[in-house]
Length: 402
Image 1: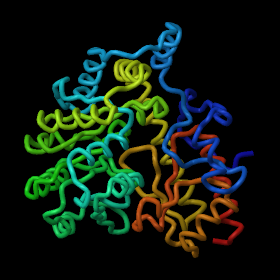
Image 2: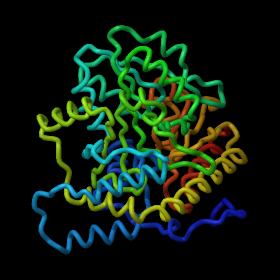
Image 3: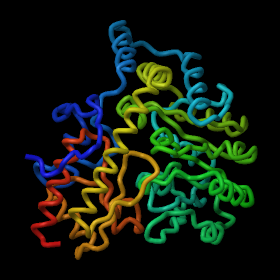
Image 4: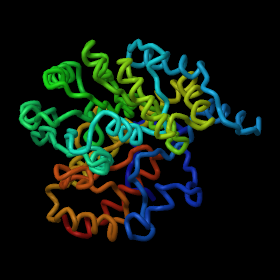
């Protein structure tokens, strides 16, 4: 019998379905033991969902498979129309279709942008704790990583703009923005973005804005593309977007970057062509078009479910594991769990979670030194899976006498 009651929360039957993912070449389910070193772990880590994509997307992909010929694809303008319409409907952002460059993923795109617009030894700023590939995408391109940690007062994260200005030098060429922020769940507001944009203009920094979580907002939140803040911002920004996080299409490897500055756009296009990285697979465009044209009702239902999951975990943790704390969030399907009151070091906590709680979470220190007291939990799973993870965590918590 489950130890947790549903209460008054209404959950969607669509997202309640438990779909077996083991044995499907799933990183999340089939590589957990390899990544974490324990057996029989419940995976609640990497940011993909345990939900099927919208039926309209599946139907479009099935039609492509049924056609049966997978030759070299030509780009379709109907994809541009779908993307343009999505940006207008979701963010009230009107951009020309000619500004879109399609790529295989946001992290590779950021890497290509760094290669095209900076030189080895140039400085690139990231705002920590942050999505962990940001570290490698700078360092492995032989650029200097500069950290501008978010300001944390114990309850809330903000930009630390004073510190930002203090670390900018003549070698600083670029800032990589996480917007909305992974893992802390901030959805940056207009005034915050305007202040950041003013500093980038003052110091002539290019901005790579990773906005992959832009569609995954909690009630009352609004995403404002950084490039839409001002004409200057639009001229210095590479806006990285994708339907992959929104509609659980990461394995299809579909993304795009909006570059309104024609000079920057042509330079990036040339770099991609010279790297032979200027094409995407046939399924990517099919999935993108179907998702943006028909997936909105599915997305609205998804975010109600995710927010219910968030509130469910927050209430349970507060009631049953008071030494842990769920940080407030404004978006994404990732929960940031503070563990500073446990009498464990970060390394001891990681071992406890794997060996005693038997759960695989994203360990906070991988997001940077500022994440050492935290763990990240993926909420995009059926409620029963989430319950099981909480039960295992509580049993391990109680056994230790925390």
